[in-house]
Image (cartoon, rainbow, N blue to C red; front, side, top):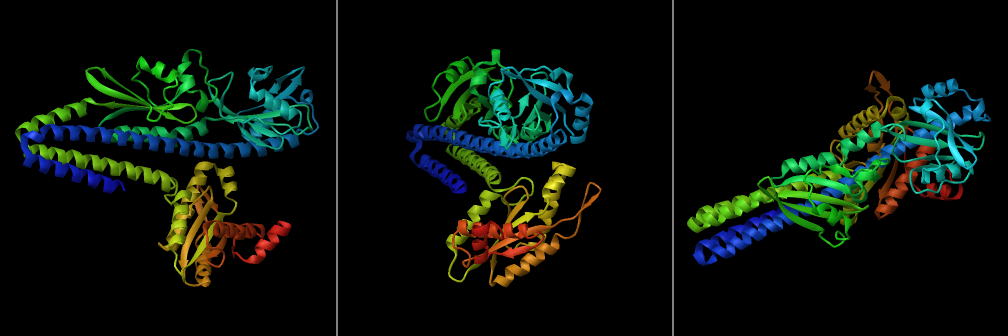
Amino acid sequence: MVKKESESLLEIFIKLGVAFTLIGLSTFLVIFYLIENKFKVGQREEISSVTGLITSAIEAADKSADAYEQLVDLRMYSVSKAIAKQLQGRTASTITESELFKLKEEWGLSDISLFVRIDEDIVVGKSTDPEEVGLSSKGWGYWFKAFQQLFEHKPVEVNEGFKAPDFWAGPLTKSVLYSEQFLYAYYYDGTTDFIINPYVSAANVQTFIDSFGSNGLIDDMIKGSDDIVEIAVLNIEPYLNQATLTVIEPQRDLPILYGKHEMKLKEDQSILSKDRLTREGGEAVSFRMKGQSYKKFYLPLSKNRVLTIVINTSVREKTINQILAMMAFVFVVSFGIIYAVAKKMSGRFLILHEKNRKLAYYDTLTGLPNRNHFQEHLRTTLNKANAGNIYAIFMIDLDNFKNINDSLGHAAGDSFLQYVSSRINRQLNGNGFLARIGGDEFTLVLPIHHRSDANEVAIGLMSCVKEPVQLEGQQLLVSMSMGISVYPDDGKDMTSLLKNADMALYCEKYNGKNNFSFFNSDIRVNQSSSGRC
């Protein structure tokens, strides 16, 4: 579509140039108006494209960060339960600092504290960090409410953080004592008189967000644009209250969330402080700085954020004046300039379109299609399916992948996923549509002639991953489980086929892993009646 629009734009300019040569001087003003209007249209389209890309990148970054943070939360949940078991039946007064230090080292924590109730307050009674001892949580807002609910043995009902039975972990937070950010976890199961509070540095999580979030995309956009000189995503409330600002939760409290905001205007405060960004299109301000003309756009985003884009309009103004001057003297030269500008704009559209497509449809780790791409492909395949077409839908899950992440770290886990996905891809040799839809979850859409074809492919896949992976000096054994449904026997729509393949996978995992199963009607009956396969 973008390519057709670019070609159409180019064709319009060519026709206008031909018309100009035929009509002569009387059409000069008309062509000038059309060129200027096309610049404005191109500018609006570029702004719209940038806004869409930034919004998509923020959403993708938030989801990636949430998933990454949840992995840490789940680990902290397991660690907290293990520590609670070790301290079961003890009171805070009987636990020594040396015991806490031993637990800290054993579980690889930054520190560990014990919260106890004193009158109407909940304070740190013991900690491996002496500065923590005596800290009161009564003024901590929803954190204090979460502590109360844990002590009352009720489910934690605050909207923030990660919740599990007897457990709550707050969002990434800056320490009240240090400039560093931490992920704090809290566990209370009623067997002690204290809340167990292990915590770890959030530096790795924040590094992940910074590395794979919107900042890199913003830098690429500015480098790839002739006009855009600055892009920033602002949190409106923190930006307006910087004088009294304390950054506790970065996503909520940082004034400048992504990009740079160095070209500040006196209009910033008034535009952001008034309800002027609710109308479609936002606001725009033209200004001059250091002899150059600029235009600053304020575009509303969700979560009370605003996207600011600064464009250097001096180049556009100069170009228009040069084109007008040349048209007055040489028709052919003006036609060539119009053609070159149109071609350049069409190339920019194609580049932005390709970046958007890669962000939306491909997994950055393995290079495989992602969940969105897979669902779109399967939906299109089923819509175009004719009588006699048969497809096998594979749901693939790597066995015990979590153990690799926990023991060797996420970087090693990522390398492991790359090795295994590469093996599977080589084995398929271009047959079928392979995608990564989650952490260690893959899917495959395979056109077949008979069900036995899917059986042969499944055997080949099981065989190709058996060879151990050499990673960080260790030999890692690989196995996977697969569930397979067949179109049209096991369903004629995407939802049914995925559900049935997933059910077959569930049963294979239940029955011992490292194998594959085809869906059949007995699986549905057994699972709905007893929860077993």
